[in-house]
Image 1 (spheres, rainbow, N blue to C red):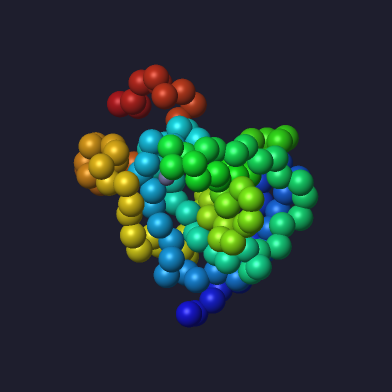
Image 2 (spheres, rainbow, N blue to C red):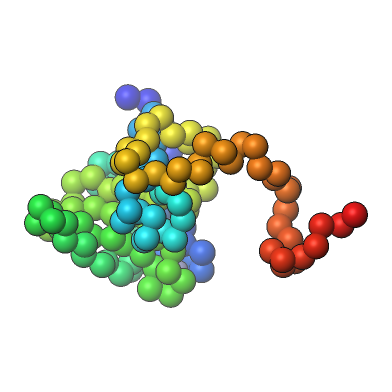
Length: 145
Ligand SMILES: [Zn+2]
Ligand SMILES: [Zn+2]
């Protein structure tokens, strides 16, 4: 495995982490829970052995219990709400770092997509949509003519 040192932090900076990751392991998850937790159409995660991650600060954990009884701790910043990682609730072995709070994320391209059965059907059309370099003052603002 080629490993890469990364750093990450929440939006307010109360919680940060460093990790040694395998850049070939980035996964996009289209499951309904990832959509709901993240507030986004899908989530990207970087599975990393827990012993290769150092967290500073105190994340809050929300334990999600799956239909199978599997218990997953969803860690987030109690101040700003940034989602940081998920791991086994009882004995953390692998931490699924949330790619969105990793500083080096532009260099960590996903290599696999899972839960395609619940993927948004319009994702394939995104490349055809106009893309601005920056945002708009209001999403309802008229196009300049
Ligand atoms: Zn925060
Ligand atoms: Zn998921």
